[in-house]
Image 1 (cartoon, rainbow, N blue to C red):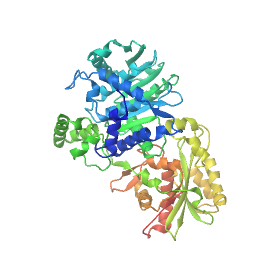
Image 2: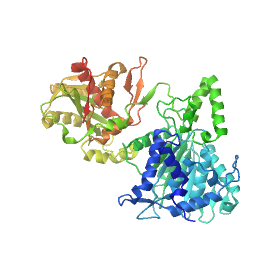
Image 3: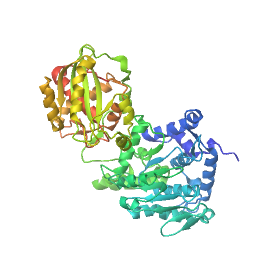
Image 4: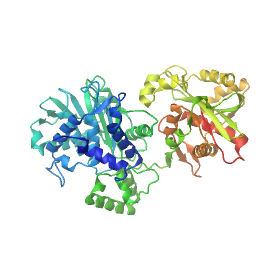
Length: 568
């Protein structure tokens, strides 16, 4: 019998999501649209390097007929008969995208981020994926399951063992020992690891799964496991799976925030797949019709819906339980202070204009400086105000230490391209920013752009020496106190300018990334300001813009309405 795209449960589910037949959040919809576009359009283009292998999909689905569930009301029944849409979606994408020029080489998907509410059979799905990996693995390949502790990683191994014992047609291919699970026909094996990064050295892993990744506060374990894949021949795969945890900063949240930038289009990354099940911003968490956005398994059958209703009723009586319900069931992060995103990247990007659309010559300008103490990014932003159009025009630059490769890998930003585009400069050695380089750069601006610098705003914390040097050159340097009492007005001004569609910027991907990274917080008077500490990456270019906006706001804009801005 012919196996076609119509047999793909994951593709069918993706279409239901995009068409609105299955309720999902913004991020899941974007991921589903990517899958459909790749299947229907991209794989048929010459410049797209991958194709969907229907023969492999048929093999995978065949194996899923032989893999039985071990527990629950579906015990001893084939997984494929009970597989829900998102589970099929992950399996199809992980196993079936092959390189056109090297079908035996690296598959398209190298990393998977899967965020699900509690009681969503995360460990069972991980166990089944790992069994499929072993059955289709190269000879002698090594695979692992990890977690913060060995007990956490042992949960998936235990599920693998139970599934093997419940599946007689595949059981003969496996040997289970205390230390590992061996696949006999290719001698590939999987073992569960402890959570100490120091104990992960010396591994040579083709694939690994990290369970409950959000209860890890740092990327230490992830980094150690990534290094274990460095010399692997063939296809690599890393899977990160978790519910949310009551940790404002954690390794999994950083991965999810990064992938949201990918889905938003700020960063290009075709090697990663992510299903981030959570409520959309602004959703009413008391509306059970929306819970399916975070709990796509439980909310698809009545027993699961009843379970969540009961948990919610308990939470209504106990505030601490409500916090746990919202975090672990609905995947909402609830910090002690209100923190949220700044401006949607989609709205910022609508304001992009080509480089040649603005002439600086003869303009009065104001500069904003955000200087780093050591290895962090530094930024200079130049603003001018047009009284006729009521528009602010800005151009922003970043300065980084001479660790371009390390920063590019760590931040997942192509700094080489940013430097080539003229949006970023190397300033200093590998450890610190050379403020004298920034000083000399500022001295060139008037001649280069034909402008007159009216004032320079700065944060005294790292900029006193540079401000003194600029003052001696005759510039009017003004300290801008970094407190919400002073910053909330220019912050609001910037936001309103974008939303009113009078904000434009010259094609500057680094500036877009800074915007995507921004998180804002409210003080006790509900004044909004950008918080570096809780932002998800570098935001220096936005901060320097706000500092410069403070100067303009104080000088000529306090009495004006219908304010607009253009950022170059």
